[in-house]
Image 1 (cartoon, rainbow, N blue to C red):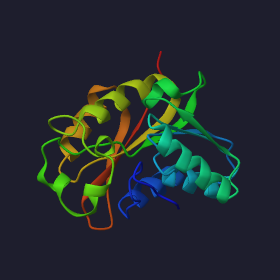
Image 2 (image 1 turned 120 degrees about the vertical axis):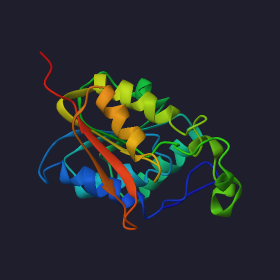
Image 3 (image 1 turned 180 degrees about the vertical axis):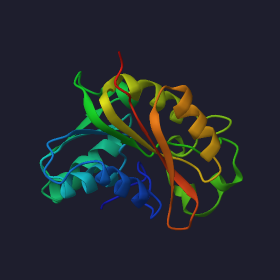
Image 4 (image 1 turned 90 degrees about the vertical axis):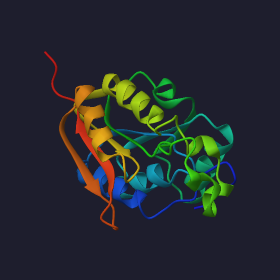
Length: 199
């Protein structure tokens, strides 16, 4: 994948999110999937390649990042990905989704790690989100619920120290079958929750 100063550098931890997403989409399914805050398109393109019958909507508020994602999709010959500019769910077309995934910013805005290592070269708004790093996670958990079809899944990457906070968030937002999955280092990294069948 091509990356730029407008995107995050893809990291191994995010593979956990892709694996969990693919496990919820049958290989021959024509599911509708959204990747919110797609950046370079790493998540959306991985799903699109493994599930070619799916329609993938990749959104980002950064048009520069979205251009990188679109170019990556074109270079890889993935024509089942549509890139749309906008903030989280507001960019999505008015259709029900089977699966919504996101690797949003989840670092606390004053975390010292933001000044170290390779994150110094990445867009800060793709990394930091509020005093506890929970602002984007809260926004997505709320808006995704209304955009999922009954029994549709939300999957979110989060910080290693946010497991209990995101578990509470999804419970309070109305999701069911909530489970957190560790990354390859054994640290809590991806939470999944399913929208119930509402009366």
